Image 1 (cartoon, rainbow over the protein chains, first blue to last red):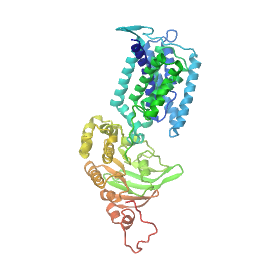
Image 2: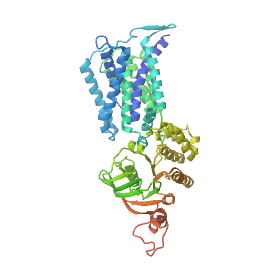
Image 3: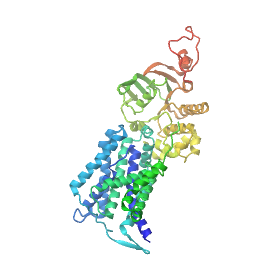
Image 4: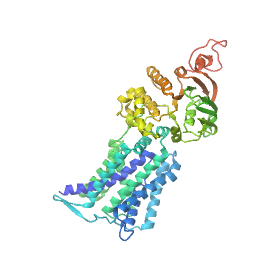
Length: 292
Length: 256
């Protein structure tokens, strides 16, 4: 019974890791670089939502606050690419890596300057409530996180598989030059992918803040763990990112229960190393050489 | 009649390297014009400049008597100029049908797409058979056909075809050139064809230009180029017993 309880809490955590890992993969596929500020964008989304929703702040309804936070991060992502990152396009990949690391620091500083460095929780309709399923008692938040993630992933899947813009995003990531030749406005499409990853980050941030308190610095560690999840799944595979996130999320509580705490803390990274050694392209790699 | 496309004194550079040094040509509507030249002559640069991927430094490109140089590809594809790049650049993880749909990305008349798919499948029956297969798993010839078919889905008036025969077997080259000719005759498609396979290109083309180090050095009707001694010697690989014999100031080209 204990195991099942741990499993559910692990899956809920894993969903959030998975969503951030999804953001890493989206950007990796669109811009061929890693956005190390992904975790900080999530925290920015979380603090925006807190500022909008909490009763001692703007006191907006939960869903309205969520929508505004999501749209704001979407606009943020779009402008970030259109105004800043597009200028370093064509530079070595390291340029953008360094740029996003720096951006992460700036975001952390700005969040801290505006909202302070103390942990804050998000007030949600389901805060503190628990529900019983058979003999299990699980926090309602965990159930909501899992359902929301499944829902979001289904929407994203439909978007990429069915809509014209989603297909254009796929096309641009698979062969940018050919997409450009076919009249797909590649630059705008890439900016829209950044917008999408901003929205996903905001939703992940809201789920994260609903589960417990957030502080400005949380984005760094969380982002790096989610990056490990993306690498485990095979950087470049959306289902892989989710699977990697779930794996890490589920592994953590079990490691914390059964292993000494200093060992438990490195378990996600140990898993990443193991995967990199045994399957260098990740568990769900989408890799095929181009035929010449 | 004014030509569909007129290029005047076009100059394009990659940084300090000048790849096109004043190219002028004209493409009558409904014709196939071929641009011949060896590696590095500037053929692909010319195509990229015409399709808007590169911005020329000087000169002008007029299409239906409208200036189009410097416009982005998404505008030009909408105007009816589509570039089928060399090396069959398909979207490898998307299905054949999705690749074709991407070709129609700029189209506003979404309702006409079904009919165009049928038309494309009629020219390339193999693509109908491979409809749901990932494009990256197609053979080289099928990928080239997909690249051309994807270009057709944009419903172009002018197609820029870059090296469609690259790396294909002689049988496939024959098949693809047969389709190119049919597209020109049956659909009225105007084509600029860049080729290293000069014989195949001149046999389908109406007019040919010879590009060398960024300049047009020769242009004439295709059948006259086919018969010309210089072309025969340098581009078709035939020995010519002229008054100068085999001793020319330049070595014979040996790309065949």
